[in-house]
Length: 362
Image 1 (cartoon, rainbow, N blue to C red):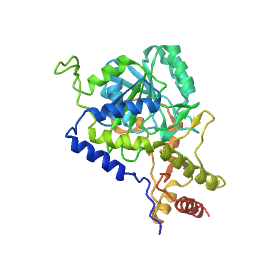
Image 2: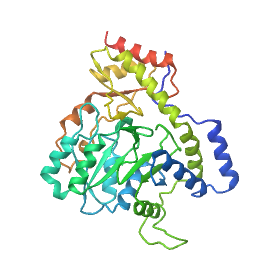
Image 3: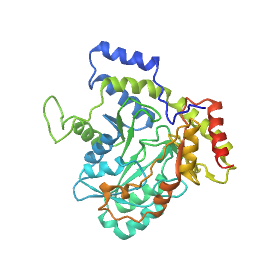
Image 4: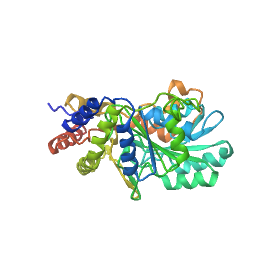
């Protein structure tokens, strides 16, 4: 029986040495190593500023606070994402408004957003576009809508490190963008997050908010949280960022083989990559018939899977008060299944995954 996990974080000698250096320095909390990681990540995304945080959710929350999105504001976003996307809007005091997704990309559908803005445009203040599974949302028409309606645009790039849209890296398109460095992501800091932006005012307010609203010494100019990243996490992040291009290339190669071997299976729809996108494959997500049967079949063969996400956000108990018409998202939630695609997979692992999928439907 195979033993193939859905994720396998790569933390080794380089990360251990970087962490040891930080421990030896005695500066294990927020400090110069965090500033170095922020600068390196900003350069990677080709933006002016980056602000490190304690995780992806706090990055989103701090970004909304820095953009002054709060009480009375409404933010259009997708109902098909991890709940943190919408939770961060609410934690900032604003209200999420859900528009349906594109059935091929699983990302926010610009046509659905257009329809919503035509009906409620005067009450909407921002768009939060999620780059789900590592595939960039169709950001150009969403940015055009934001310009037309004078809205802020935020990218949730928590799953999309290294993905590109028309050749430019995600994290560089909105008024702000947010990344997560959770262990299963394309790169990790253990736990951690990052805000990227070209706006100096947003970077300054975000940096204050994640540090108790503090400006200089012990002057606290705004209400804030302790959302800081540690130097230990940043040291891991610097090592992981150096490896990120290799990680993404391996994920893409694994995805190519998976698609090549599964494309002919009529019970399975393989991931779609639009011409504008370079998918980073945080997840390799198929649509399939009899999902529970396939998942059980793979599990019995020792192959891990994931369902991201079995319940759309608007159907979660915490969102019972939100009225949403999102049939495409609801159907996707019933059919999607993520297969292993991480860089630790061997060619034999990838072939084993596809062989088991094919045999399930024979």
